Amino acid sequence: MRIDILSLLPELMESPLGHSIVKRAQNKGLVEIYVHNIRDYGKGTYRQVDDYAFGGSAGMVMMIEPIYTLIEKLKAERTYDDIIFMTPDGERLAQPLVNRMSGYTNVMILCGHYKGIDHRIREHLITKEISIGDYVLSGGELAAAVLVDAVVRVVPGVISDETSALTDSFQDGLLSPPVYTRPEEFNGWRVPDVLLSGNHRLISHWEEEQALERTQRLRPDLL
Ligand code: ADE
Image 1 (spheres, helix red, strand yellow):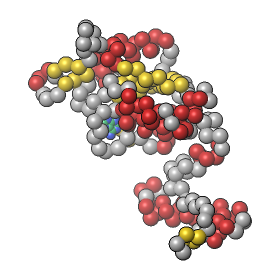
Image 2 (cartoon, helix red, strand yellow):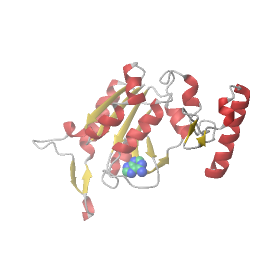
Image 3 (cartoon, protein in one colour):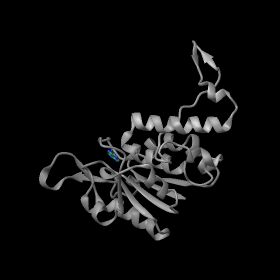
Image 4 (cartoon, protein in one colour):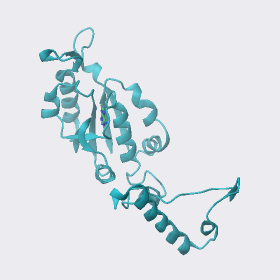
């Protein structure tokens, strides 16, 4: 899978994309991620990328031309499954959409500034708008990092123990059961006996019960 991220603040993406599973996926050659600086496509000595809003509303607005030039350049090189804009008024991100996206070949993700992007970009260039929740971030970069992390971990082959991503919370519509490690007892707080029993049938029965109980108690809306 190839992911192209279009941003005015590429540095914001470096750390989230440069560690852990996302980094490993790139090292394994399963995912290629390119972060493009929109400013490189701005005009003039100052490489202008934003301007005052028509109608006089407060704040600067990202201009259509640099973004159009960059998107068209990328589109001429390959076909994209989607050109996504990160925005709080987009479709709310959830696991089914993440899973669907993990089958994409090429995807573009545009990070903008809410209220601050020429609306013609959204009308004419964007094919999908995604929100990561009902709150407003300063820009789309952190939201894009969340989306990329969620998608990459379910790309086939990225997590070597295939079942590991499949047992994530939400994959079967349930929250995950709790997990424990050594020591068996700390401060008098004991690991549930069943997990020390070595009986795999009992253990998976217990895990299923826990998943159901936690979902009923914490997220009944999922059931
Ligand atoms: N940009 C600003 N806020 C956002 C959000 N909640 N989700 C996605 N993109 C955003």
